[in-house]
Image (cartoon, rainbow, N blue to C red; front, side, top):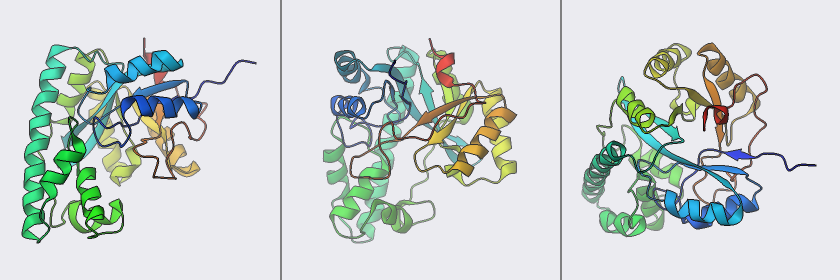
Length: 279
């Protein structure tokens, strides 16, 4: 009998806000039985070359990916790009501008925390991120390490989430712009974790109509911690807007026992898989 294909098309390494190196991530995926993996770090392709070297060594099929932050109607959405050319010069120039945006946001968040008598944040997150992107998760880890909160989620609920004291609104590219960066680099644009935005059905239909019109081709229908009703709803949106479906753990850290590489519900039968769109 042949080994069943196990897809995980959404995960993060140290190049953004994951805790494992690209090599460690691929090795863990292989141990978890993943056969096709996409590394989708936030706004960077820095980990892909290392991931490819390891994937070739352990026999995993690696898809070049990334996850872009994008604005639409005052909401921030995450768009996964699968099958991109990570050497495409216009894409690299765009990602460089997003690196500057993230660095500027980090300085502003640290300043707001300092005004709350919580100093030292910027130095901590810069050291933690190293060569990678600084994300709000790094600030959440800082707040946990300094015993201001007990968990990452509490850090977002009390300090870093929208409307909280250390929140900084960020001018991400518009949704249509982010999708064009992905498609021009030869990739497929996927709306990540669609139910996490807490939109009404009417708003979700509006964003999906815009997403599809701009060239988006897929939506994540299976993500870690989705229940059967969530998968059914996401699949309904995929069918309604004639989008392919994707699946991914959104893995960041082994410390989160609820999210593991490759540990996902079965892919829905009626949905066209996104991997059929990839070369």
